[in-house]
Image (tube, rainbow, N blue to C red; front, side):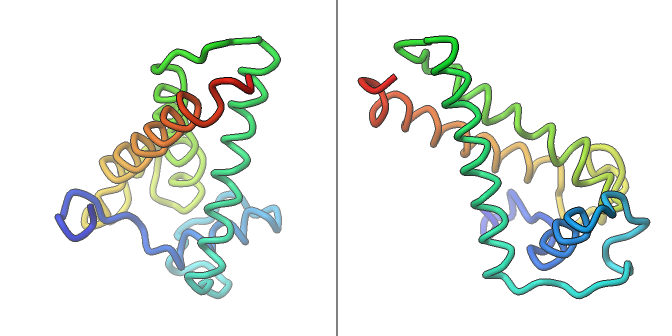
Length: 138
């Protein structure tokens, strides 16, 4: 999607820098681009990103299991995936100094549409996983 120009996103190194800042208790910085600290390598960002994704997936699985939702309707994981866009909109972007929904961020980052599209595809992945891989286990 990045090569098509539909998405861009904040550089992964900056997002990783913010995640490390948040882990140190500094959730909100004035501007992640100029705040103290080092950017992180892409591999470190990817570890953080996928750990967050696995955690969010486990939370959905736990909700579905506790509520005994079986079979899982196709729209539930899709809606959940898109709903996780609230995390960057109201926590990460403001925490990085980009404002609510990233509206004060650099326009070339395309923060709103990037988050929505990425989380839509997360939801599609969850939907496919819950429909075909976990159908009989829940």
